[in-house]
Length: 79
Image 1: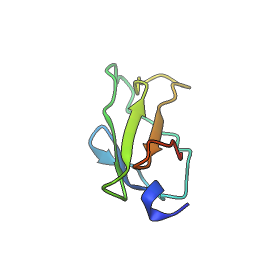
Image 2 (image 1 turned 135 degrees about the horizontal axis):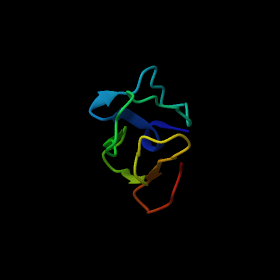
Image 3 (image 1 turned 90 degrees about the vertical axis):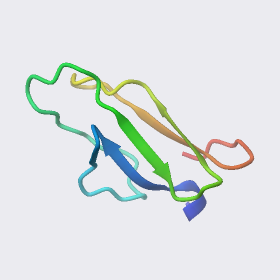
């Protein structure tokens, strides 16, 4: 996977994801006890020509996945 198809950064609730690595595709996030609202998930692509889409809501419940998809300039989904 080259730089055009990787993430530059990933944040949850405004905080950078610990140990973020563009070659890692799965993360598990623990939220503080009592959190009741969805968390804002933001991702930035390494390349300006790629589009990032966050799919799903980061609800503070166990097993609630959120997908981050990266599309290259021709519209192909790469990850």
